[in-house]
Amino acid sequence: MRRPGLLLIAAFCLSLITLTRAQDRFADSALFAPPIPDSSVAASRTPHPPQQIVAADLDNDAGDAIKLSWQLSPDDRMGGQVKEYVVLRGTSSSGPFDELGRATRGESTFVDNQATLGTAFYYKIIAANYDKSNGKYLWLVMSQSEIVGPAQSQAQWFNSSRTGILIGILLICGAIIYYIMAARAGKLFYVRKIAGIEEVENAVGRATEMGKSIYYIPGTQDMDQVQTLASLSILGRVAQMGAENNTRIEVPVARSLVMVTARDVVKEAYGRAGRPDAFQENQVRYITDDQFGYAAALDGLFLRERPGAIFLIGLFYAESLILAETGNSIGAIQIAGTAEPSQLPFFVAACDYTLIGEELFAASAYLSREPKLLGSLKGQDFGKALFLLAIVIGIILESLGIHVAKFFNG
Image 1 (cartoon, helix red, strand yellow):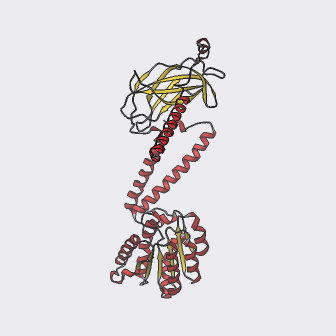
Image 2 (tube, rainbow, N blue to C red; image 1 turned 180 degrees about the vertical axis):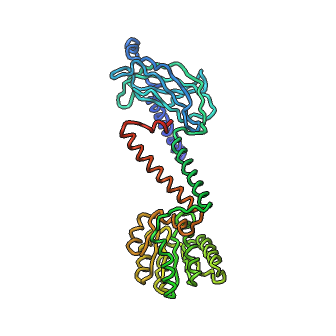
């Protein structure tokens, strides 16, 4: 008998809470607040409605917004009778109209971000004047505008505010295509010398003279990282040099997918060097995915085998200094490279040569001189120069009061 009684009490409490919330919600709405009982006082405090309401599709959107604009009420002034505007929306000119949002005094625009593509909507705007105490309306008077509509949202094919971006993309793509075609035609382009890449051949030669192996570490991350991809392109060149000099190259990796890819890269490099039979699959082997377990395993390999040259090229994190310091302690020549800013100081301090930032990505084009890579590199350099020039010109024009941003914003 106790359980039905408890359920009855719980149901009563829930109904009371729901009723209280509903009353609070209606009390907060301008549509349900109590009016001024005295009609003469109400007339003196009732504001004029806004005029010339326009409902039109919002430009440069995906078709889910309608912009409303209106002429402010004559009573919309400091100390005037307008406290706020209430925007109502309906799917028919005869209603019903639901409250969509509110605009503060002095605002003459409102964006309906809840529009549905292809659906016609009707709008009207209420100018409201009221007084509140403790969150409750003491009185409220309002006047509503004429109904406008139907208005429909439309999706635009092109965002005109991004015209500048389109022009920049076209210029850079055109430059890349031009440089690739010019490189294929045999035109020679100047590429700034990168010390770390210039010393690759010397590092391989030193390991060969000492009769020691080469260790190549392509970072600790997987193939979804662009730094890993750039590292593997450099690995192909280093492996080819090692094969030509009959110097064994070891590639211990931290990811299984990197192992498969690196194994193919090294095998292909041995083939280009004319020594495909010298390649052994255990030259590229998987160690572990664990960050510091991988670093500890490499440290052990460095100390036991004492390679003549170590390449640390790719994406590294906290293990970078551990690896670089161990390689430095055994006297190996070390060439490192990463685009991770937080790890560059460690490589600079502990390695002989360091590829900094984008030098890592330019290294493959620098080593291979392949037309596609070289043309892409030169095209990107053109884009950087273009953006720097645009920034300088923009600063000068803005300083002179010439606002060119209006052109790009449509």
